[in-house]
Length: 615
Image (tube, rainbow, N blue to C red):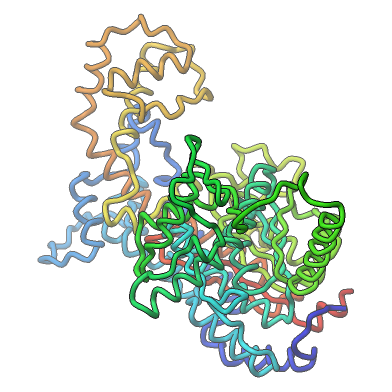
């Protein structure tokens, strides 16, 4: 049976029905999702050739001429205007080619860029109308929690009642993601009446620590890297120490309008003038110069976000925890009775802390997780829980959803995937990953019945960030241009070159195109004496006038990126819709795409009755 219930199974079930009926305008059936998937796959069957073209082959295979029948200037102009430029209607040509989504039905080349852009918008997730907003989800969860007898999950409060400011110990992107997602996870846990969270692919533990400290949840963070889990454990330990003092001081500073308290006093460190020695250690307390620097910054904190304060507070999490005793007597000078007394008090204090805060623990675990992983073998104290994943790479995101469906102890899931290029595809003829394992795409029975696949280059395109590129951020065109021209040189002069060898990150270290080529040839272990500097530079000068083609072509890829990502996410949503045990499933936009391009979460909940009967 489930523990930590805040409402009866009957109340939970009735509240679920009331919520789902209230949210019917936003909820889509399985057939609705399948219809939208059908539309996206039809669109991509015509346009995917652009997304699947590799930039490395751009000049060696004359990619622009093969796929596009308009000028680069037309493409860039249409993309910059969003495809909505209005002008004088052109007279209809008698022999105007028939097109599908802007592609000529006969030549299969792009002839109408505006038609393509409009179709791409219509087949992206916003255009399909399949996503909930974060606010809609939170409202529904809280209303259900209230009706079912459970109080809504409080947001933004630590265990001492202070509001944690994540932007003081995380960068702006991570702070935005952790705050937005943790509130949703806390509401899911509240609605399901559970107190445990399993964070798959927990990495450095930012989300896990915040859920534990801020919402009183017991969090198990599972990551395949022992370095990550060890670092997360240390970071969480230090964060708990620093956050209380920091929040107390920050609240006092806001109330007075100035930072009048001394954090040094609050931490119990006695600073004595002239007591520091050459090593930077203070005799009156144990403090290095680095720790003193951190405390000085904390004493000047203001209610507004300060990037320098943010960076230094983040760095403080890697500094040894500051001792809070003013004068320290060496253990060798303590009497036997005093040592025994202190040992007894420490054990009693630890036992008390475990009893009071057993539900507010973050436990990092090291394990490689697949859909077949037995959670109870990893977690002895496992109860019913919410499974979460913040930017889980490649196949880990679909594995998380498979685990949610298969494990009766998992009451809800909130999964944000990333790194689509690392997904394994069951039906990709060019891939061999899935011969003896379960693949990440497709996940749903619907798409598997169609043997659907995208291809690695298309999945790479899905990782592009349309919103950022639209503002002039994201694509480093010169490095792509250098790599494509290098491929021409390799074709012309190094016929024995094996394409599976990687050039690596050479561009960032290069001072010119000639230097780039020299470094690349050495990396590939090729004879660079075949070419003079003038030979190399001539390739650059020959292809430089065609750089606009590459720029325009990559903008077409960016335009198609949301549609490919949409297909991958719709497949995951469809998978949950196909499960009888899942009472609610949705795609939710959790993050601002400018701050966090992989902004969509797949959210699912099981009915209480199904979870009880499955035990």
